[in-house]
Amino acid sequence: MPWSGCCGVFLVLSVCPPVVCLLLMSSCPPGCCCLHPGSLVLCESLGLRSLPGSVPLTTSGLSMARNQLCNVDHLLRSFSGLQELSLSHNQLARFPRGLPPSLQTLQLQENRITYITSGALQHLGNLTHLDLEDNRIRAIQPAALWGLNRLQVLSLKGNQLTSLPAKLPPSLAYLDLSANCISALDLLSMSSLVNLQIFKINSNCLRSVPESAFDGLPRLRSVDLGNNLWVCECDILYLYRWLLIGRLKMATDLVCTEPFHLAHHLLLNLSVVAICPRILKPNEGNKPELTSLPSRLDKTLVEVLESSGDVVLE
Image (cartoon, rainbow, N blue to C red; front, side, top):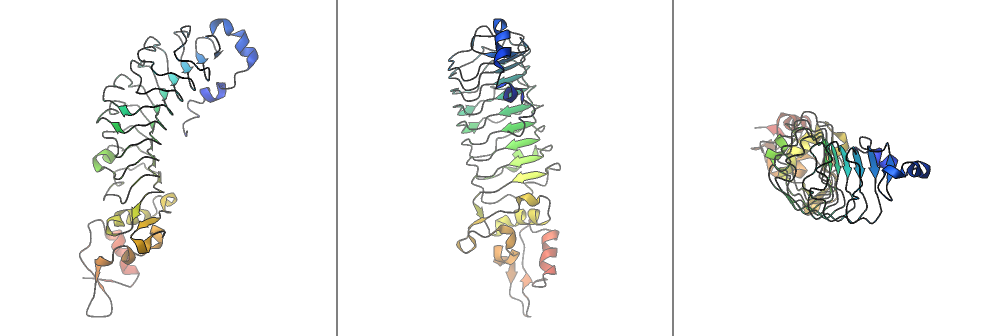
């Protein structure tokens, strides 16, 4: 994950020095590894079906990754100082309930979560990082994430979403929606992402991008749109123009899937006329005229057309 440095304590502690573990065994749950007793506790890959009963209530970082947990509802509520929690690679079928509001980092990747309800995260206003990668999430209720006013990093990669979650928190700086089934970008949902810097929506089912989709994202500096189902016809001219002006050069290798005669071509290797032939009509002279244009064909694109010498304005 791009934010592993922020919660890298779990990665660093994954290989616990045996001598240290032995020295701290008396204050550590059986089989677990603890550094700084009462602060960081790792109980990973132990085949656990429930939380150990001897985890100190003063624990600030807890990893229960790679176990066989099916339900931890309300079992962590009393850990009032818990800031980092990893429940990744378990068998949770839903978002855990009753988590302490002190949490800042929550890792839930590779579970079996299918649905996020509007009340599941209502007490987690201190979350800054949430990883739900590689679950089975098909739907997120409207506003389920809206109250997370400090959330900066959200990964929903590798789920089964068909649309952009509604009412995403404006605090988001990093959003990963790659490897889902999203077929359209909702303008209302996009408009709230005023602080978004990195956006990954590659490997989805996008065919085009609605006009002005990215215009309200002033801080956006990286976007991954690759491996979608781009239809290189008139509806894609907004995206074509947006890429053409060079805001994000790393997103320029988009490959057309339709129409048939443009399949496998890079979008930006095509001319406007090849993408949208209907914008031109025969003129009485030797040059075609520009007909009524889609509104997305703004001044920048018109200038590109005129500079080519192949069209004249009506």
